Length: 165
Image (cartoon, rainbow, N blue to C red; front, side, top):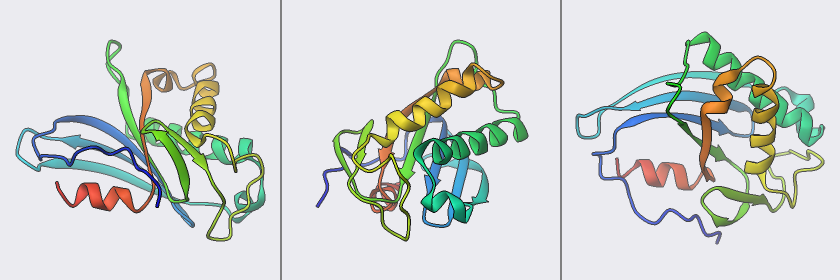
C-alpha cells in the first residue's frame, strides 16, 4: 500500500478557490472549485478533455505539455486570473501508482491502464508538470506563475478525502 500523506479529513468548513487537474486513463478533467462559507458548500466549473491515444506511448514532454495546454485553455475560457498578490492552489489527481515522501511529490512506480510514456517512470510527476507550467509562464499564460501545485493524490485517495466533505 502506498502512503498518501493526507493526515486529516476535511471538516466542511474549508473555504477558498482551488484548481484541480485529474488525469485518468482516458480523460483529463480540469476544474475550478470554490469552497463557500456554507458548511460543505461549493461551486464547480469543469472541462473534460479526451486524452489523445498517441500520448499513451509518447514521451514525458508531450504528455506534460498537453496537460499544461489544456489547463491554459481552461483558464482562458473561464477567464480565471488569480489576484496578483495571491497564489492559486492546484490539486493534481494522478491515477497511477506513485511513491510519495510528501504531499507535493510523487514518483511514478509504473504505468498502468495501457500507458507507457517514456521519461516518466521513476520520476517525480509533480516536478515534471510544474516544469511544463513554468514554460507556459514565459510564453502566454501569466496565470501559471500564480499557481502552486499543492497536492498530488492517486485516484483512490481523492474520493476517500471528498467523502468526508
